[in-house]
Image (cartoon, rainbow, N blue to C red; front, top):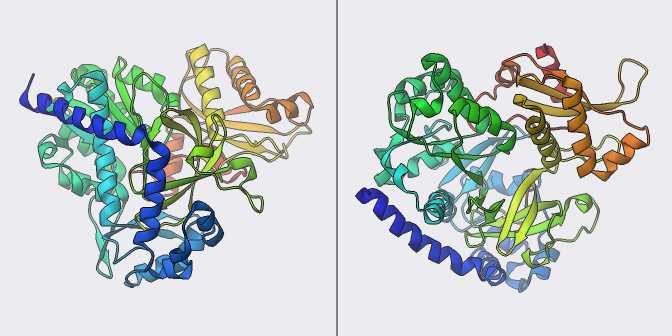
Length: 498
């Protein structure tokens, strides 16, 4: 055992002990975070506007601070962007994470000294949690790659501006910098395909042990390695032990990855965003991700089915139930107050509090009242893949409300197969039945002859990649939208059909 791996195990044990303290006292931990946030921001412009000096309880907070998304908070953010201090949080943020807005162009998410500290610690602790549970620390001696956006940053009124993944690149610990790939110069390449080709060149002869990134773009990297060397990734990198990912569900990609790698490797799921780092997979034995309760974030939850109703109840951690689809609302030490992140989650455990990401509150199909969510279509896809041996590169789902022929409407699944099922009709049947088993509203619509069973449209090889490139979202932290209640994505993708 090397000195570095021995030290990693000791450090992992220490962090596990610290984590256990708040895991075993979750409600008090969240209450303390809540009061600390309100007290710290009492004299900010936002705090004075909302009477923070009068807030003593969560009910006080609910009555004074409404749920807001970025658009509703934008007037405050614009003041911060203009250089004003003490607006949402004391002083000024040290960064803006620039993301793509849906209605207003670019979004500027403030990141403070306190919030970036928690972001970095969460990334580190996810790996240390894995080391503590598995006792495997050998990978720390090898090379690690994180497929991410450019670390180059601009400046806006004295505040640095960049993509979250690029900002995070500035916080790689010194003890890992010699292990980290690709080079700074390669990380700064803007064109994604050029960047991945250069990453292949820099890593192909290295002792790669950890590879991290959004699955769809890591898949592109693996495919280029396979094509160039005519070897499985696991043969090219015999010590590759750990895949770290976030942003999308890994299960639809797992079978394809195992073929590209040639074997199964351990994986760690993360739940980071520009607005905060919310959860990570803390166990290889248990499902879900540990919700981070001691990281400067106070959580509220609203039942997704009630979210758009007036007066929908805002629940605290102690009020949640297992298996319910919740919109997650966050209040953070970067000055986001009762902020609708847009993500939906389900609790699969309350001892400790573990979650799975079930989708986006705006990304669902309910053209006929079925309210199908991302988690349901992803589980249906996994079932179809497992039962048929097919392999899928990417997919999305949309309603077909007015078919060209005189027939019932249906859900259209646009799928790019890597390995087409021997019986496509059987594959579609498994998808449909599995979706019916999960969603009683969809079942009722099928049995009531309101909808016909789903139909598959095959997308040609590379079609999803070409689509993402055509809309300027190839690579980095960009993800294919898994499902939608309209035809915008589906109609654009149709030009790439087989």
